[in-house]
Length: 421
Image (cartoon, rainbow, N blue to C red; front, top):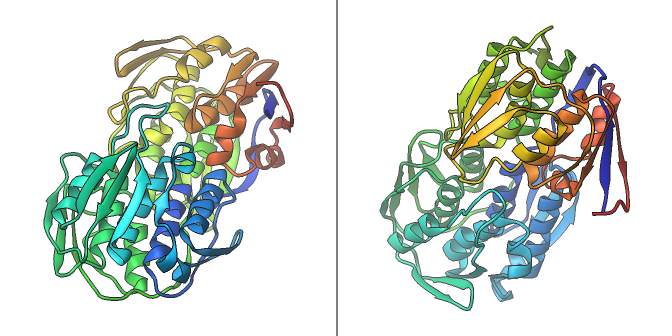
């Protein structure tokens, strides 16, 4: 397996291009299943999750071509198996998002149950309740869930909890249902808004995306389109923290600042200077970081996908910080690895108390999930000596060639292939 080695202490300066958003790209790939002609997406990030989704779409009967510009032709799905197998779902939970468009357009889908994952259980019960409300029959057997309906019918659906994937999945199913569907307590994330924009361009009638109530009027047909994927707010936030903790000065080109208010507010609270410029977001690190307290919340609150990265900043601040995780029950697995590098963090349930000011020293650490991998890279950037990060395949799910891009702005970081696990 690969490993990443970082020699810390470098100040990051220059420009970094923010690439297309992973969390937007994956449901948009699924949305292409709804069209009766090919859909082309531009600014697609080169990530292993995107490749996994392409494999799933090909298995369903789609023709998929391209890379940064990706064309998905769903016309061959009619004769396909309409099944998402365990081998793909186990590596990427977003695979279950094919259920909504397959059910809405073809009336049937068979998808492996995803089970738990490293950061905690993420059940799909809200997805299935939504499909049932639209008239689908649900059957579970041998680790798979089958959803079936001759023609879905609009309904009023109130999610028990805010669910991004559930909102997106049911939105896609309802886009071709007969009548009007109203989703209440819907997720408000930018990626939900992006999906609504794409569905609208395809011919769907959707109002209210970005609020907690979304109304969908079903249509009979949807067309393939051409669309540029929005920039990744989580990638931009990760690089913004890299600038802040290294005392750097980075211009994050095309950073979606309007979707980053919660992260920018915490960076400024910690003492970083954040300036929205015509080209993007400039972040300048302070001489000394101030402590912060934060609670992860659904959008527009502080995103759980930025919690691990912001914890690194908190460990370097002078004073005590408190981070409360409310989204996932097991998202502090990066804490022991940060402590190996020199952090002082005490966890009690879903609350982490961080005592700065840490003096990181390089060591061998193990990545446990995608965002934990990013936080270890950040810690390595400021650690004294050499930090070796293993299991970096997690990084490739959400950050495209992060080592090459950070090296261009001054980081002493390299990837080595074939490293022991």
